[in-house]
Image 1: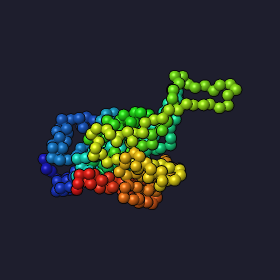
Image 2: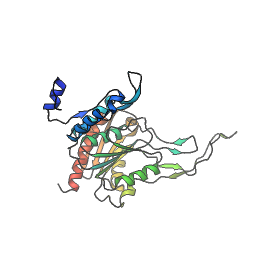
Image 3: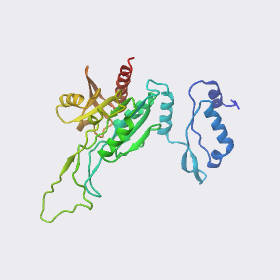
Image 4: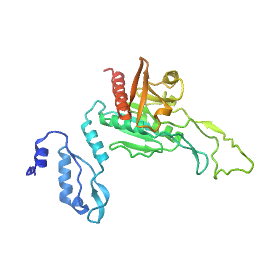
Length: 304
């Protein structure tokens, strides 16, 4: 209707900035045809509409109408402001977290990867306008707003999900920490301690190398590949070796014991042209630098 009889309405009506609306109200009010009609009109005029959450209301009723949490609203704002960014129209695949290889119905082999770096990379790619697919192992994190999240358990599941997602994508950022080995045979029942035995021998089989296996995958000739190397010794040498053997455009190397599970990290970026050491800083800051490199690599692929 174009009413602007209060400050908020006047700002919304006069501004040409992107408009995000997060409606929150009693469930019956939200479901009313008048409310839904107005939201549809606003959407048709270019406004971004967030879906309210479901749950218990102040009235004691339960239903759809709760204000989305702050993290979701901030994520929606960042995605909206970046929708015309340098990765608009591109699809970026990010992997995050560790994998878990079962030994029996209750035990597994895994690692301490928290997924924080992958989350930061997914958010940074989204903020640059990319359509982001985040493939992650078991982590204690909520998927970022506006990102398509796929949960996996084992390295084999991660491999299959990555292979399906990267076809036609502009970039793959492999920040996950997949287990290198799995149990050669998974026990069907819980493994029991045996009387008189002080040691236990477990036969392990090698898991597929996901990045190396993508080199000849159809539909990925122009895929920018970014890998990670978490090392405990010979950081530069080990990372440089992986850069070549895995066919990567860029590798991010870090000291494993200092960064796993931490909110900050210091990394070494290596590519064919040389290296750049980044200082210890929040992972979100590091992610922004990595994405700037990815944008440049995509543009180079396009001959720009």
